[in-house]
Amino acid sequence: MDDEQKRKYIRRFDIVQGVVNKWDPIGLFPSDAAPFDEYEPEIAHIVALLDKNEHDVLETAKGIFKVFSDWFGDDYAHYFPLEDCKRVAIRIWQAINGESIRD
Image 1 (cartoon, rainbow, N blue to C red):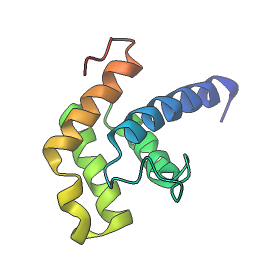
Image 2: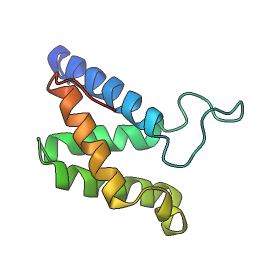
Image 3: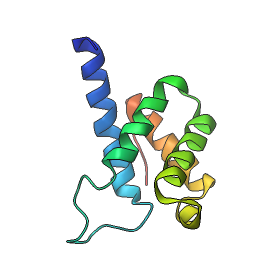
Image 4: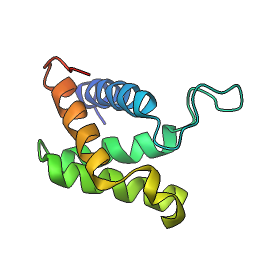
């Protein structure tokens, strides 16, 4: 990975981390028991899928759903329904593209 790719990865990681932590799909925050980096493994997987699904919100949303299903299991899928994952994917792509994100 060259310097440009590292910068791109770090920027995307930071963006995804901010969006995912704010979303908090499993409801871990705020909690003294959950560290800020609680979702880092999942975030790393989401960042990796962004290159595969460049600006494709639905595919990104499906990928986000799969990442959390793989990590937390199907019993937790009601915490992160596909519709929520789609909103998260939109927020991620807006932030990557420098668009403002409205709550």
